[in-house]
Length: 202
Image 1: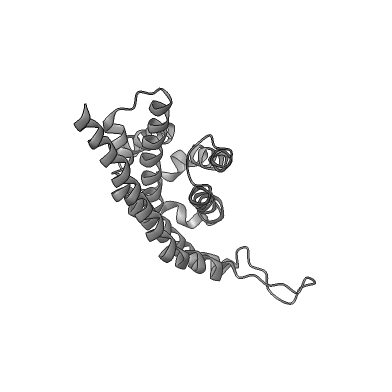
Image 2: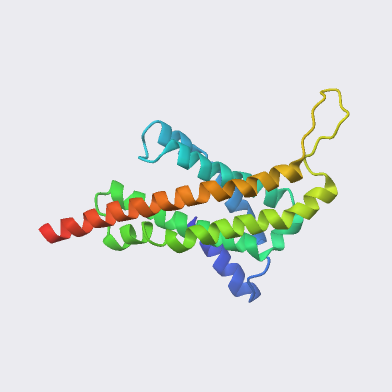
């Protein structure tokens, strides 16, 4: 993810504009985010102490957005909303992997712990907003092209409307986002209050 961050900065400095920066980091973004599917396995076998359900939702939703929306609907790749979620993801993952690395080394700086359990307050809504705006921007192109849709009649007697499916995906954020967000709020209180109590005893 640091590679992506450096790529964004270099592209911005070269172009002097934040528009269409997606193309400068498209390949590493696809590679690293698709590779994050391994995180589900890591949670399942206990390498990482995170919820399998929450991790699966987060990883799968990102992979879906990268391949089934941003990759598939070329017209949205220049949207500012793409840069919005990519920036949020990049900062979040750099902090998260720094947290895991220093934790494994048994030398976790308080600043990284604080950032891990605080910056999400801004980054999470920022990322979700970018994701929703990108899906919304893709809708007219999906409808016009009939992308991934299957219409009747066909030999399987089955139909699928990808346009409607994307709308359902957007609606699913309504119940799921608050649950994940307040789960992190709860985790923040628990972890940081424990740190403060530990400092008092020192």
